[in-house]
Image (tube, rainbow, N blue to C red; front, side, top):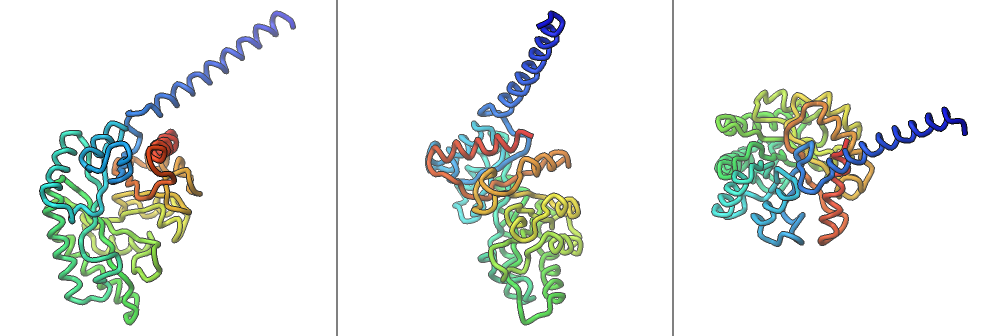
Length: 303
């Protein structure tokens, strides 16, 4: 080999090695255990119980050690007041946020606001008032609302108007406290009234309150409608909260068909600083499953 060619070849090799080394260092830094993530992912109780134990407060502390800075707890209102207070104190001490919990109004399909029945509205409003008190103990800013099932003996327009009117009354309860109820369209059953992003967007626009926005769960919307990023973009002004789970299976990202690295990159570029709720199961159990869970989020967060 000529000397000039050798020098060129060596320089190219060194350059490529440097680039590769920089990429490895960047990936290592991004994936270092205990580092925070680019987005604010929120686990729930049980995801790390194999290591941290069954006590939720201990598990929250371990989540913090792993780099998570928020949690979710759908059933928070059913916990004793003393436990709610302890959770709130722990989060405050660690500088963590409380994500959503579910407004107690019965099951997802129960006491439907679509029916326009006073007894259903009363149950919903009672749950809203209870949720305000729960939220104070943990400094929660978002609560999940599912309006209920279709009322099939009524025209869809009448049902929609009934839902809007009920939610306006709920928003009146939450607004003075700076709490946002986030409406979640679901894929669990076609009996549910709220199913699609644009449908939820229309309702939030009609309610017209900062306390009534969309909870966009990418798992449910991949099943219901797909086209995730485009639909989020069109309805972005009304989206206040994100949840995820891969499809099929509703397990952690990387186990299904959704390209969460692209979705999360888009959210970051959009300027989203809210919580991304880990609303899914785990593909493996025990300590092995916990490691797989963290590795999956490190992978998709490395965009």
